[in-house]
Image (cartoon, rainbow over all chains, first blue to last red):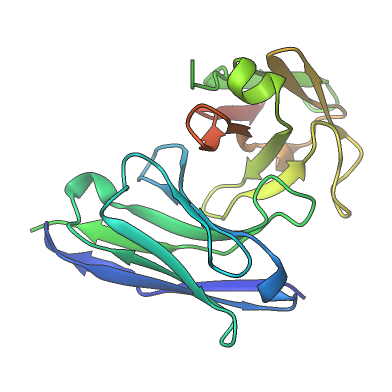
Length: 117
Length: 110
């Protein structure tokens, strides 16, 4: 059974940093592109970033470029999102997703990040 | 135009057929495949349709997707109360070099 379990969310002050993790199991993690998608409270979905299977290629939404870094450790079957210079508008539930837009598309349950003083 | 436009709301009675539209542009829907997601209250999104019209295993055949030019549609036939949810379209956008989501459509089963 495919499982994606996010962790690392919480309350952080504006300008602070946080690292999210996504533990994957039930599939060959090292074969798939992985993504982060977020959803602000009461709002729609917004794509954040993606990384290819071996971690050599990354892409970011303009809203997080230069502040967020996506990475992965295929030996640990774990995806990461390092978030720096956090702003109030980054407050969201962050989902990791496998093969977004593809036939193996699957999402975790999400972790809440709240940026507030 | 790097925006996917959906109606904010839709409704139907049990047993009815409803459609939800998703309007985009040549940089996204016309050139790339469309996926549709269902988000039940308090849960993570799950894919209903990928590659414009393909249903993953486990998704009822009441759900169907189509695409024509710069627009796509999700149809739900035999509407059931458990279909009450938010629905999102999504596609890769070549101009943004990223995934675009529609604003979402809240489906109410009357």
